[in-house]
Length: 414
Image 1 (cartoon, one colour):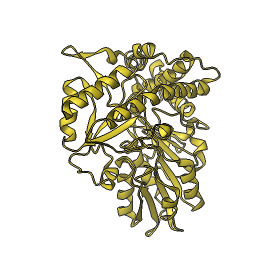
Image 2 (cartoon, helix red, strand yellow; image 1 turned 30 degrees about the vertical axis):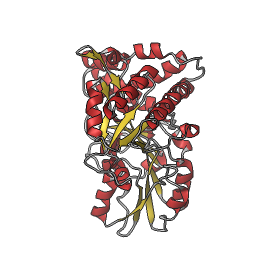
Image 3 (tube, rainbow, N blue to C red; image 1 turned 90 degrees about the vertical axis):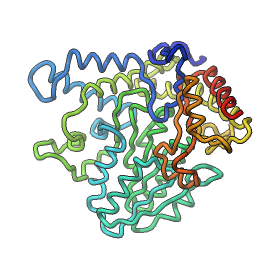
Image 4 (cartoon, rainbow, N blue to C red; image 1 turned 180 degrees about the vertical axis):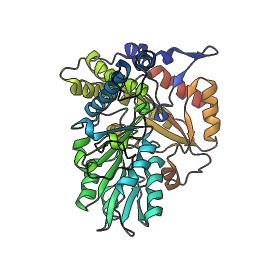
């Protein structure tokens, strides 16, 4: 069946908003997506009817306990986890990585190595640089290939030694959109005796994630990138999490995930997180999917990708027709399955800020700068104070928005 774009857009109230009569085109999705009304309603309902802290004997506290459990169970389903014990929910992916890096690296010794790829968002770089300084660890870097736009297996293998303790690996780049072959890369790292910490923030809005099939030990993503509230989620193998030292208060449970979630939880956002998982399951059913909840979620991603990928190819093709434009990432339409719909570009004569400002005046929301893809920008020798123009599509964007964006880019470049 064809993708029900009108019905999908009708679920997102913000998509119909205008600014002084100018319709908004949300192409800023790599930094944060819009949310369906069902997510807003779930957050509102909790705050109006169930607000309380956890652990009490009264109704609203019991409801908060249930919200906490359900959010972890729902994300376990979403990520293909074995149980909610493998799911840690926190403020953001970056916060969780900083926090867990302390536990993960607690027994690392001076001279032990952490390998980081230059495709990483700063959230999967800064925490490892800081813990390396604290513990006298060695950082080794793996660049991405400027022709394939991916981290190649032989380049990772060249940096692995018998002292490698952890590999920080990117699933999909928030600058180039490129998707790495994480199963192959993870196997190399595991064969070398290293843990694998995988950043799936940019992948999770566009592809279904089955964490246990990837070969990694930890995986992080951000709900506000896949149509949910501002929360970060960390998946970790239960047998590994159970053996990590948790930095926590004395009266906090020693069980995972409680021992890794500091302070009172953001229950209202957890209610919204469960509604986000419901959204994907409902979308899968709307698009003709069958089976259990996990199967419906997977189907939702399959049909969304089938809708997004032609839009992405159309946008890339249109950009390439504009003189002076250089795209940083995969442009071969036959390789569309190896990238997410995040497209970054520069123009020979127009500053990225100039282009982004002109698009904003036309109601088209895009990002410019390095977008915390600091290492990719450095690897590409981009001016760090300028970066790129970054356009990111989602399954609620339309062909008309793509065509209008290309038209407005052409105007500002003329």
